[in-house]
Image (cartoon, rainbow, N blue to C red; front, top):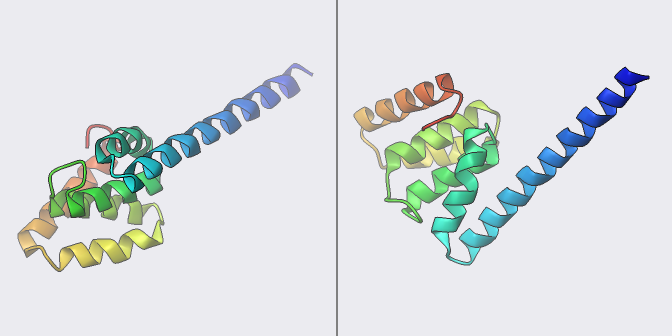
Length: 125
């Protein structure tokens, strides 16, 4: 009986964590749509560092357009590449589009940064 209660409690915490992730992602998306890019970045970055591919994709968009962060195609490529590695399909297309504006050296650097970020479990990227 105790193991059943423990399992139920774990499910409850997991569900509340997923709801919090969705809420933070939604707050970031709403801030971005309203032009409050700094708030969007603040909402998305912790999610990206927890491995949330949608937030990583959104950071790639922000870096590719210079919204809330300085425009940086290498960092955009990195975030798109990371989200692609997690199966977020739209990221692959955007990564490849950003690559069209980059030198081979910049692409290589973006790939290296993505590998390093993944190895650090997305922390401090």
